[in-house]
Structures are given as C-alpha cells and as structure tokens.
Length: 254
Length: 273
Image 1: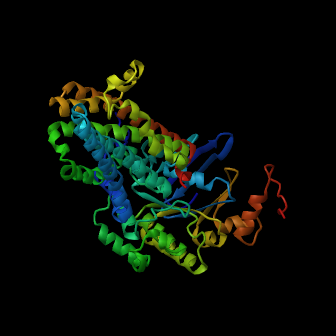
Image 2 (image 1 turned 90 degrees about the horizontal axis):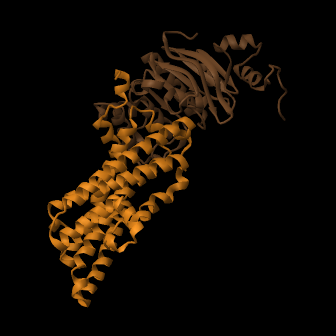
Image 3 (image 1 turned 180 degrees about the horizontal axis):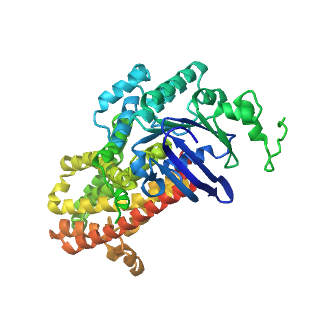
C-alpha cells in the first residue's frame, strides 16, 4: 500500500471490449503524496485503466473512488481537482499555446488566468513559443505545453500517460525533474504509465505491473527488484511480461 | 433527488464561454474560413436574386414570387448554416483529436451542446449577414421588412438546425470522421419536403404528411403568408415551435445516448483522424 491516505481507490475493476478483457478485476490504491507507476507491455491495460479513472471509459464492473468520490456517479466533482496528460491525445493544432491554455483554464474555472499562465510559462519555459500555433512546436515543446495544460488547475491528482515518450534524453530528464519537484511542492499524487524503467525507478515509490489486464505484482521498485532476484526494474518488467498464463517464464521472442 | 445526481445537471456559463472561445479563436485565426462562411450564402443570394429579377420581366404572376424566392434563399441558408455550424464545430474536435482532453475537464455534455449551439449562431450571423445586406441595394429586398415574424422564423430555423446538428454529431460519435459527409448532406435530405421554394400543396399527398411533420414546412409557409398576404399565421409558428421542441428533445437524447455509448466502447480516446 503506497504512502498517505488513498486518493485513488479501485476495487474489482474490469473492462471488456467485446470478448477482450482489457482490464480484469484489478484492485489498487494510490496514496496522497505518492508517485505510482503503472507498468505493462503494450495492450496490458494501462491506458484503459487511466481512461476509466478519468471517466472517459465506463467500466464493465467494479468501483472507482477518487478523493472519496464515486467516479461512476459523480465524476465531475473529482475532475475539477485532477488533470491528465498524454502524448496520444492532441490539443487543437491551429490554436496558439496561449489560446489553448486559456480555453482549458476557462474549462477548469480558473479566475486569474493571465497570472496562472504567466507562472506556468515561466516554470515550464514556454515564453519563447507561447504565441505560436501548437502545430508548429517540436515534440519537446508540445510535451511541455501538455504538462502546462495538466497543471493549470494545480491538480491534487495527476494522471500521466507516457509523459516522456519520444523526447530526447535532456528534455525527458528535465520533465522528470519538474514532476518530482511539483509532487514535493504540492504533495499531489501522481499515477504514471510508462515504458521507461529508469524513469519509473527514479520517480515512483510504488509500482503496479499489469499483464493481460491483471495486476501481476506490485510494490516499491526496490522490493520488486529484490523479489524477482533481478538487478534492475527492466529485468523485472521483462520477467513479468514474458510469463505465460500458468506463471512459467517464456523465453525471449527472437 | 440526491445532491450528487443534481451535480450532473450543473451548468456553467464560464465553461460554455471557454469552449465558444476555442471555436472563435479558430475562426478569427483563419481569414479563408471567415470568408468561406460568407461566400456561399452570398453567391447563392446573388444567383437567386437574378433569377427573381428575370421572373419579374416574364409574368406578373411570377413577379409576386420574386421577393418570396429571395426570402426563401436567405431563410434556408439560416437553417443550413445553423446545422452546419453545429456539426462542423463538433468535427473540429474529431479532426484535432481533442475530445479526450475536453471530457476529462469538469465540462458536462449539455454544456458542450450549449457551446456548439452558440458558435453555430455566431457562424450564421457571420455567414448569412452579408447576404442579407447585399440583397437590400442589389434587389431592393430587405428581410427585415418581415418585421417581428423574422425573429420567430429565425428562432425556429436555428432550433431545427441544432436538432439536425445533434443527430449528425450523435452519428459521428458512433462512426467517427468517416461519416463527415453526413454533416454536409443530411439537411438536403429534408430540403424537398421543406416547402422552401414551393408550397406544400405541390407535393403528393403522402409527402405532404411528411412535410407537415417537419418544422421547415411550417416556417416557409409562414414566410409566404407574411410576404404574399401580409399576415403572420400564428398557427404555423406554434406548430414549428412544438415540432422543434420534439426534434430537439430527440436530438439531445440521441446525442447523450451515443455519448454514453462512446464512453462505454472507449471511442472518446480513439475517435479522430
């Protein structure tokens, strides 16, 4: 169980798309002030889990409580206090950075928008391109804008889907440092899905490993490495990803 | 009703304004888009205006219909542009793959609908406004001569445009951008039975039943009554209003049903180009 009172509490959560069990009866909590990693191979159920937490996908069964609010009955009350970023969902391309952030600031009901935008522009180094259309930005710049969007309402819970995907090492490192600082400064809870094991080892104090929609194992990165007799979290990940349904470890696919 | 259930029906003008701002930024940032809005209604008006002028020279019976034709062109454009403004603004969200971000904010589906209605109204005013103004010096026809009934027709046409827009967007939520052409074509399906340029009585009996079941027939017959006989038929207006209420309810329910189905099937994340 991660530190702090549970901000997210998930029980018996399942999602079936037709005959496919995208998420299969998972249970977990995310505590206040913790950074939890959601790991798994492609198709393991990470994005579907995050989408259900956000209310974008309705679960087939199970219960989600965020800040003690039942997300299936009253998600809007919780949505105002959380936010989300994913490189796979875009912002309007033709709008400038300022316009995009202004629109979202209004949707989150912010009052002093210029001041908030000014602060985020300074912290996330957006000033040089804040009046440029979003479509003209580089991947690194877009990621920072997405992060600014995700931090507009100073969320108590931040859900991040691969926050450093397709970024160069320098920018990725900068983003990780910023997230760690934000978490320390605000005591926000962060749930991040990532394929970057070094990132997870560096940022996360708790890890959930998914395979075929199920949570296979969970714990702190150090304990998982120890439990699997591995040297790195990447080895643990490969071990989990290559286990078959009976628990036997399959050889690498060549 | 419990407090949590009531929260679903909360309505924030601030959020509606925020979303309208998104569409407005898009419009004002593109001169071609703004020009295109006014281009088609103006061309349509010029074309039909000259056809009407030609009628004036041919027969006294047709001469009476000249103003009616121009009025019909302008009112039809209000309906067409109203529907298109609603549907295209929704398509903008699909094209930019932005729905996933919008619906993780506290934005409610009904606020989203209200924003689409507002921007459709703005687009109609920008698009049809110049055509209305062009008609005054060019053909000595002012739609404003309709007086107060113009407001009654305008409100009804916008309402029906939104109702069709809601049905189109509901369909787009199900089929994605592949159904884009529906946004352009749907309204023309009802054009033949809308009595835009000819009275309902011209239609075969069975089609007249269909025509009277739709608000436009009542609106355009009402317009003809004002322009030809100089009388405002309250019955036409009431019928159109009642039918619009019905179609808006059906459109809204269809949209909300398909929105929920999109959440159930995980389409809000995937939908887009």
